Length: 404
Image 1: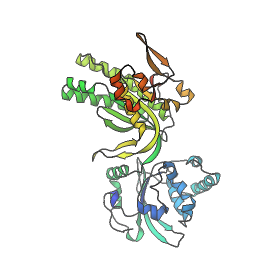
Image 2 (image 1 turned 180 degrees about the horizontal axis):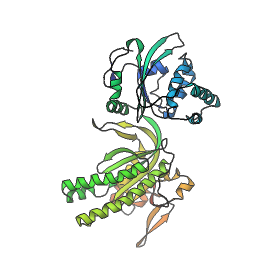
Image 3 (image 1 turned 90 degrees about the vertical axis):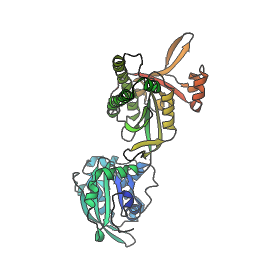
Image 4 (image 1 turned 180 degrees about the vertical axis):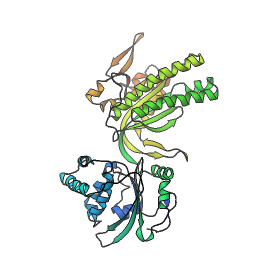
């Protein structure tokens, strides 16, 4: 490990450093921290709950690596006390034993709660069971995204570190762009403006951009209310994620968010029809799916950070938004199956079927995509990749309030 100077990017940090979210799970860590602090490869652990720092400290590997474990645990517990009560310790991570809870409660009683309004600086020794001793100055600072720990060797600690950590925008951006991919359960909502090409052709450029920007500003209120996390723009569409870990009602909230959006789009469409005196109805077609995928961030430009998931979950939701027409909300059988019985009873869903010359709505059923399109060969060819996917349409809900 080099003792060189510290530059303004994470890539240049050659001393141990890591970012903990406020559930005390490691979101980012460098190799020096793996080697000097934890003694094991953390970045290969994909399940974020298994990266809980106290779970790691209580493991047999850490106990056989660090001799003064209690000092290290107590220092991190000081930051836990800052936001959490003692009674929450037993729920910190899945599978915590009674013995572990009892030990952490004793550490909690000894720890001194820290203040979140400054950069903390403390000397901390790491005594190895092999007889090694490293003396560090540990700097800890707080961001909305979590707590950043930066270790400098005590005998070579550099000046200017507080200034570096105070450049919050740069530090946070670097951390988010390099956060570890994590396997998470989530619901994804993809919304796409119907006939956007035709609408763009009919409007002057400045009015078209006004329409698009105004629409997303209005709909942003619904995404915030139902705990959606912005993913990215796709043409004139958008992707939002609802994470199970952050929101136990994630799936129902994604559905209620879609219903809220449809109501707002009806008002928005009426406003533009009156303004332009045209006959265009503005529809936002939506697809919803639920799944478990690797979730991380991407950096499409130097100024934007996008959250993204890789896999079929997002692909199916995107294809369903392409399939939906006239503001419909389509979802998969898989998503409906992940709702509880009580949750399913709060929504109306089913399939539209043709019977002679009329359309009827059959509730509480699903249909393969191919069967929905059997009278339209052109569209059947467009959706051959999801032809056998069982889907349904969500039309209404009895209650559309954020589930907390």
